Image 1 (cartoon, each protein chain N blue to C red):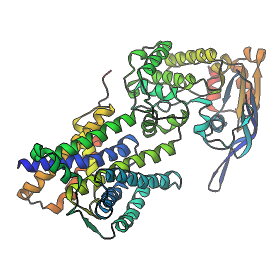
Image 2 (cartoon, rainbow over the protein chains, first blue to last red):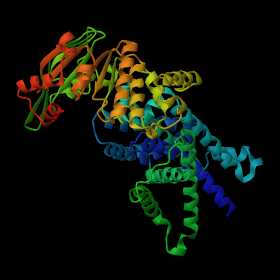
Image 3 (cartoon, chains in turn cyan, red):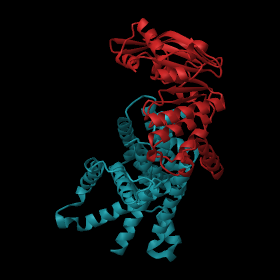
Image 4 (cartoon, chains in turn green, brown):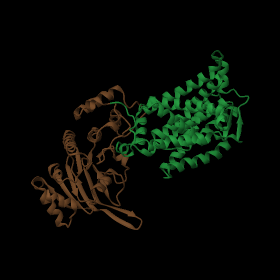
Length: 299
Length: 262
């Protein structure tokens, strides 16, 4: 049971990076981006290919995965801003294109990392003193690093412009900012994070699979919504903490559901159905709550 | 400073054509304060949109300080043109704080990966807010969504004028406020216009305001300038006279009649 919770924490944090990306598009930029279902796999595929075929070290592949994801996000952003395709459709189109591209990258639907020195295996060996917590500690370090970098980015001049783009396009245009550029940039960074998450998860699981990204958007949204319900704040630093907490809670819930779900007649394959229903519930709940004021910073 | 030459704007909706601005010529000298009045659909807002670059004109050219800006996109023009619209919600980013909004405005144009709100900027912003004298300097970390309409519009004025634009466009920017707030905003606007010597173009529905403020008054109807008043003529004008001028051009609508009754 204890190791089960450690695994849930590890996964919650590893998928948490993807949730941070989804937070960036959905919450900050107000751009519901479906590319992530594809770019998650792209990150996993590139990382696995470079590890298994080209002998890259398991840490630099994370950076390469980020760049690949950012490239995919850039295309989605350009589809929307330059070709005027709606945001949802731009994301869906890119997601479908990535399915083929991911198969091309891997050369087959599944790439195993069985006898490869993945980051998790190296860490397990190097930090054996930490016992069962070595991998958890390693993933937490990466996730916290990514979170702090994202916080910092959102506090820069460009970060401010990005936040204002999602908030009030008319206002930020009047302040001399090209909102199209900001959207492309935001979606690119978001998909970079999602791909980085995919590369980390692939190493953690020991394989990349072309279907592993299905539902990334929904689990990410679940994390964002759970997090923002529990930790209400309009400070960037707390908002990103909330996303990670949401992601961990979601994973713990998944572990519990998989273990005890049979008691109420659920089976493992019901997971995505239940998750989506939860997200729908969370999304429509505010409509039924008597126009409850969103809690804002006390003044 | 600003000149419009033979500017027209035609909106094409399916087979429907609507001429919003018709062969309009307008020159604004540096430091001048021009007020524009006109009935609904006279093309006042369209005119400001054309100057701000929200959409391009169908014909004609727009020059700003001898430079042809007709094809320049809105966000580039915004570095030289400040604009305040009627809706107090439109000029600020509601989920960002007062300080964050002003930091955005302090940095027109090129943005970098430097921190947007260092302590030095925060101090500068506090000083600027003190000038407004409405207590916002103590609410730097409040989300703008918690501010009242008047407070938000004051903030918008500060944001629009801080960068000292070459032209300030005011689009009925007091119309959505209650009378006391509207008076305050007008006073604030005039103070800033004077302080920075801004070249200003103000659209208003309020004829008294149009007579009282500015150096020159332009009356628009159906996309054309039908009358112009300046100097003595403008200073001595009355609302009744303006209404008569409008009726001469067969412009009679409810709003004008209401003004006459007043």
